[in-house]
Structures are given as structure tokens and as C-alpha cells.
Length: 381
Image 1 (cartoon, one colour):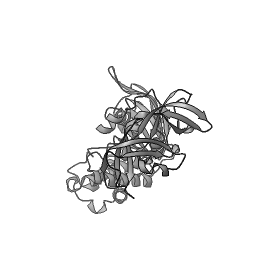
Image 2: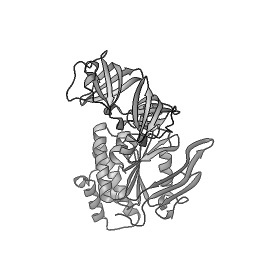
Image 3: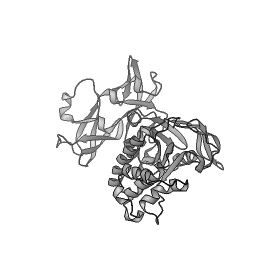
Image 4: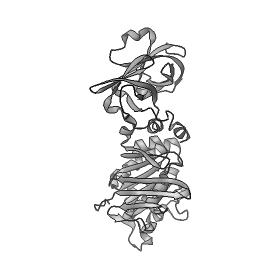
């Protein structure tokens, strides 16, 4: 089912305006053949508009869309080698599952459909439900029917527009793994639009984080999480703590920062801001990278770790971990996630503590950015 003629999607300078409003600013994007690619962002960021321009459901205001070597910019949707799966599934209620999946083949006049439909039913693991009607299936099963109905047409690219949005959390997580399995088996390029960070990181090989009609950062899920280049990406993908700091010195592979009367070390390779002495930098660290030690035991903290002092303002026990909020002179409401392995009963609100972490886990961003960018969008998503 793979297509060797180059199943990638290439957008060159693609843009979309509605009157004076720019939904998508000129955008260059390449989706590698056979990859699972996610467009991730909050409502109104331009991700669905971008998907619809690939599908031919929206006409670009400028730029071109290539599928493989073919320029499809002016082609109508039915002439493009793509199929789209929507959140609503859009199954035919009067047809059984077999005939829903066979629909595209029958429309093209193909008479012998049984083997292809049976293969698709096996792929989505719904063989025993072939003669049921859509209303007799669960939401997750209906979603798999929609995927099978699209894949039987052998598209070069499958477009998925928030396909799991109507499912409850547990089923959504099951379907994330199911969709990834299907994509791996068929080897077709999947382009998936979602506002759900966990969904994108679970399923996609490559994620494009979109913000206000632009791609904020593009990369693998682990690269985006570990090496965010903007405060928006750092806040939108998970949680980040930021310390406003000043560059004290640079030596070899490290940048030494001053913050709140103390010193912090930042790997130069993880600093996307200009590291000039006296310049401002936002030092970022993820909550799960930090260790929390009661102030009475501070002498036992190994040398060479970044450390700041503070006082616990609040804590939440959430099963696998305890989430602490710590007030510190260098950062109010510093968040720390501690795994529930050996719980220190002294770590309660009001306790004086030392936060410490491996300097290698620190990243540096340009201090001119909004420190809270992405937080509202992440909460809304």
C-alpha cells in the first residue's frame, strides 16, 4: 500500500487570508513520506486551515501544495490522492460496516471488493462487526471504520482532523496506540491535526507546534520537549519553570548565570539566546527534573548541581507523584514533580527546602519573550 513515487507533502509559501485576517502566514513545511506528522496547537492557530488546504477544501491565498512530485494547488479535493477522516466520522447510517468501507471502491465501479474490504476489516480489527450498522458500534469502533473507509482508497496521504476529539479519555488513549499501529502497518503518510499535546507526542514522529498562523517549532516530540526554542513551546508542551537571570560569564561548554544572589550553570549548547556577559536570559527547567530536599539536609546535596532555596507553598498528591509549588526569591510558584518512591513527611506547606538539579537539564531562552506565552492556550486545550 506504500507509494514509492514520493508520498511527502510539501507546502511552499502557503498562506490563507479571510479579508484582513491572516489565518495562516506564509508557511514552508515538508512532511516526509511514510511519517506520522502532527500539526499541534490551540484553537485558532491555523492548523485545521492548513490541513484543509492540503485536502483542497480551502483555497490558498498564496503558495503551492505538492503531494509527491505533483502540484495539486488548483486541483479539487476529489482529484487529490488524499483522504480525510473527520472528528464526526461521517459514516453512512443506512449502510453496514462492510458497505461503509467498500463505498469508495464501489463508487469507482470496482465490482470485486470482498478481499480488499476483508483486509481492511482485519487491519482495524473489526472483522466480526462487518454486518452491523454504525449506531451499533462504540465511538472508537466507528472511528476505526472511518479510517478503514479512507485507507481502502490507497491514498498517498491520510489527513486526520481531530479524529479522537469525541472520545472519552481512556478510549482516546487506546485509539492513539491503535492509529499509530495502523500507520506503521500501512506505511502511508499520516497528517494529524490536534490540540492535545499528549496525543501528538504519543503518536507522531514529527510535530509542528503552531501559534497564531505560524509554525513556532518543528521537531520530534522529545526534541520539542527537551529543547524548546520559545517560551510558547516550553509552556504549551508540558510545564516549565523560568528564572530571569543575567549572564555572569561563559567558559568552554557552559554559561554561568546570576540569579537572586546565586549562580546557575547552563550548557551553552542548550541556550538559544545570545549569551553575552551582562545579557539577560530565561533559564528554564522542567518540574520532573528537580529534586526537593528539606533545608535541614541541604549539606548532603552533591556539589555541582544547580540549586535554589525556597519554601513550599502547596502540594498535591496525584498518585504517581506529588506536585509541589515552591515560593523562591528567583521564581514565584516554582513547580516540582516528585515521584512517590520515598516520601519525606517533612515536605509540607511551610517547610524550607532546597531545589536542586543537574545543570545539563537547564535550557536558556531569550529574555525578551513573554514568560507566560502558551499558558492560556495550553489551559484552553
